[in-house]
Amino acid sequence: MENKKYYITTPIYYPSANFHIGHCYTTVIADAITRFKKLEGYDTFFLTGSDEHGLKIEKKAHEAGVSPKEYVDEIILNAKDLWKSLDIEYDRFIRTTDSDHVETVQKIFKKLYDGGDIYKGEYVGLYCTPCESFWTESQLVDGKCPDCGREVSEVKEEAYFFKLSKYQARLEKYIEEHPDFIQPVSRKNEMLNNFIKPGLSDLCVSRTSFTWGIPVTFDSKHIVYVWIDALSNYISALGYLSEDDSKFKKYWPADLHIVGKEIVRFHTIIWPIMLMALDLPLPRQVFGHGWLVINGGKISKSLGNYKDPREYIKEFGVDAVRYYLLREVPFGNDGQFTEELMLARYNGDLANTLGNLVNRTLSMLTKYNDGIIEKGSLTTEYDSDLINLVTNTKEKVESFMEKLEVPEALDSIFEIFRRCNKYIDETTPWILAKNEDFETLKTVLYNLLESIRIGAILLSPYLPSTSKEILRQLNTKELDYERTNTFGLLEENIHINDFKPIFMRIDANESK
Ligand code: ME8
Image 1 (cartoon, protein in one colour):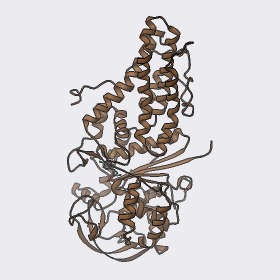
Image 2: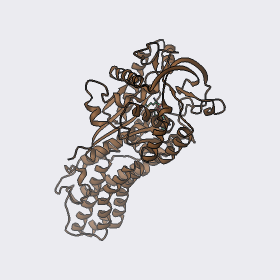
Image 3: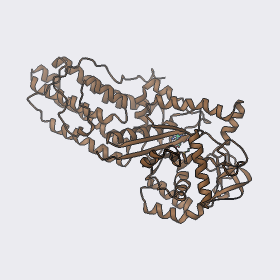
Image 4: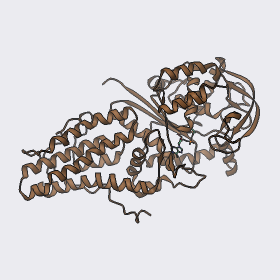
């Protein structure tokens, strides 16, 4: 097979002991996309991690009476535990305190300085501490930070600047000529019209007012601005400018940076300009997704409208949480999160459509054919419609995934399960049994099981443990993704006797 590579990243998260379901969104999607690309035969690299420097962390550590490193070492475990509980399979969890990252950032800063793209000056500006962002007067909303609505304060300091202005025309041209670079298109227009075209000012990229950051090697009272530090993770993680840069050579440029909409600005202005200044190719795509919202507002710690995502996992199971995140939110737009919606998706799609189908079919196989899978010699008038739908699904899923339309991809797989349920109503196996039409009955059961097998393989990137469990219950060795457009590969004469319901209905009252 041709050596196809796929490099995908999430943002690196601020260390927190209070992750909410919104934080899980980017990571679950990135995980599903990675698993899907693997099925398609790509050599994938999936990067996530934590963004550990900055004044905010320094202050929190001080309040807790520990050093910033001790503080982050402790709470970083929370992220790793959360990703594990969500079945996230990353290739590297990078921490911006990792020594290889620190070294690379220092080399990047020096390289930009030596190349004349970073210069020394004096900064006077309005700074939002919680967001670690500088704003101009005109960007403020009612005199406050446009991102979080909090107070900004005037800061004056000797600082290094990065020549964003020098690259403005080049960036604008690049974005115009590469329509896929910023997606969805609404975000591309927003970046061009609201930020780039009005003019880019040089960016202040060092700080002297606090110390928790990466020191500038040639001027040690300065530390590197957190966003320069954080964005560099996408290449430092691969060994850029290090002794072993084989991963960098293999995987860069990134195929996809998935980020929340509020940080698209950093990823489509500062980051590409850093790469241009370093003479590196730009990522193929930055995708800005919407937020998970509760009653129209962002889920947030300060609003207190969130639960630890592990509580939902305990209640509904990991795949139910993954399913909700992947299915409910139109990619690119905001999506609602409520426990009622979660329960409705669980009972409707997972328990009724899928769980019940699998259990009912295996029970009928046990009852009507002693649990043995066999192809019958007679057919029904409904077979070809079912078979066509099932064998066309692989292509449909691939075309949705190509456009990152994950909910649509997942729904087209569930179309198989819905069609199977309809096929049961159409063929009425219990009547076939009563009439002793066993050859048709075997066909009907085989077609159902084969459709379920194909559906389960297609489901594996999204609901990995459910997929595995269904395939285990089917006792099949035919697991090849490439052949999921071929019907009839499920082995005959397999004996099935070890099965149990995969999703049990949950009563609304029980879930409280
Ligand atoms: O921004 N719905 O980190 P972060 C969907 N360290 N996504 C949400 C969300 C919600 N309710 N709440 C948060 C940072 N997110 C930086 C990134 S990258 C070089 C540095 C998403 O921990 C948010 O949009 O504040 C972002 O993509 C991610 O969680 C991390 O946010």
